[in-house]
Length: 273
Image (cartoon, rainbow, N blue to C red; front, side):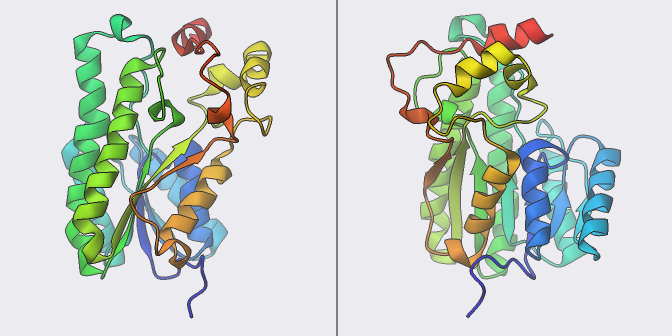
């Protein structure tokens, strides 16, 4: 019987994996035996991270391949790289996101909204479809979409972002049904606020950090490993009977109640600029 969380022999593509959550996922995948395509917009950064992972693993556990969420062809090249270099594809983690538009719906231009939808929804769908035949050829696999707790309820201060992240929940439901008979599992992780460069304005300000963590039952922000652990589970034999699910990893923050006013993320990020 295989070890429940062993990824030996598996090949994974992790988008947005030169930093933050994606980097944490890639490192843990390699530690559990997988080979990983590292992706980000900068080829030198991808190669640097791949070299660090290979050094730590003592084997060729990673390769760097630049990919831009705004460029479908570059995303499809990630799948090609995995197949050409490692012989196939077993796991796709769609972590990269365009998240640079904050504010209410009436503060968001049509052009910004369209760019968010194209990158986060349309192009991620194209990436999943590019991966599909290769996952099927391996007898099944795991697709993991990284969404957000912004997708689980009203998020008026990150209107465009929350719409995009909620759309990923529906995408996962659709693909889980379409691909289930091929043993391809499709699930969503919805992290709470997680410490990374992208969320620096939220945790670097002591007053804002204290206010935000006060509403989290576990009393802290998430770390990349909190999300990586869930990804390892979903990608491994331990998650073999899980599909079509949205799994919230937020320290309990979505239990805070609807009576509290929403945090104005736009103001926080504008203040840090």
